[in-house]
Image (cartoon, rainbow, N blue to C red):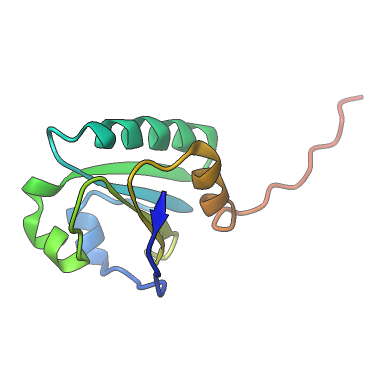
Amino acid sequence: MTESGVDAVRLDSSLLRRLGVGPADATLLQFSTAFCAPCRAVRRVSTEVAALLPGVQHIEVDAESHLDEVRELGIWRTPTLLVLDSGGHVTRRATGVPTKPHLIAALAELLPTQPPTAPAG
């Protein structure tokens, strides 16, 4: 997973709506193209992580169908994955295929901590 420097830019709410992003504690916003093999791997990993962590959604966007948004966000290659917090701020930006542990670590700081459960007894 290659990360570029991100200054926690907040994305415009209308842009998020156009991309299909709804309310969530964290969002994995993936930009893909039809014949991109690494995009399928990012989809698999992101879907698994989103299913594992409550409050995380995975949205995959066809870059070719959203050229205005792709240009606005400076997406130059696929796959590109943006990690968004609940306020729509880009906290991480990665190209290539992230590992599950890297993705979980990137999301952990964005998710509310769950209180420990008391043992049944």
